[in-house]
Length: 243
Image (cartoon, rainbow, N blue to C red; front, top):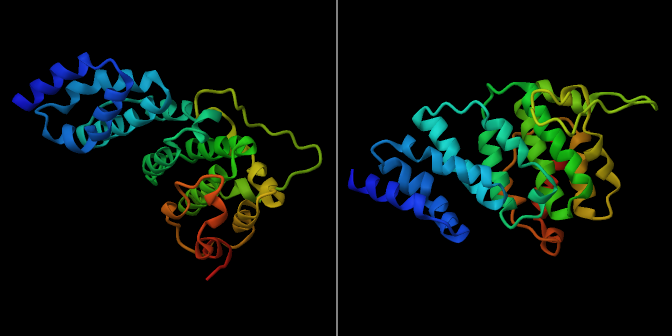
């Protein structure tokens, strides 16, 4: 009870982003499990999510913990998560953490295919202007989701005639209404001729049979433009060689 009162007194007084970041880094593991009523910090965490940027990304983890472990009713969680998928997210310092968290958030097999299609289609669209290190994350991330949700395979198998008009609405804020499932992942297909060898090689995974299990994202995170050339060879081969 004393621990809870201390945190409920402290959080409203945190004004500086650096202090808020430190609090959020320990919130889901070091704070929430020890509060008498974890739901009481929802307003503060929600405010951080609304702030956006890297602070909002960190706050999503605490918000998801409240939903999953403490029965918080927050119907717009995936709409809020989808809003973070803008060009900036692929250039942020916390880009790797965002992919780790998003992989967790989208891990449930109960999520509708329409919702998941919007996320991978939006990432595919962002990849057109993303640095190679970010594209190297997007490709195995997308592969894992396609592998887990066969209903999405249509996105890489849909034939396109010369007059194809992509029905995906990139300005729609509701991931259930973007028409992504009627589209295709032509953006990722275009990376087969990417100037960076690591990217063009990884893209071959979508032309192979999906016979291998999901892949560890840790092999593809935390790379920069310089280090992406040194993505472990075995990781690339694992993506393009079928068992």
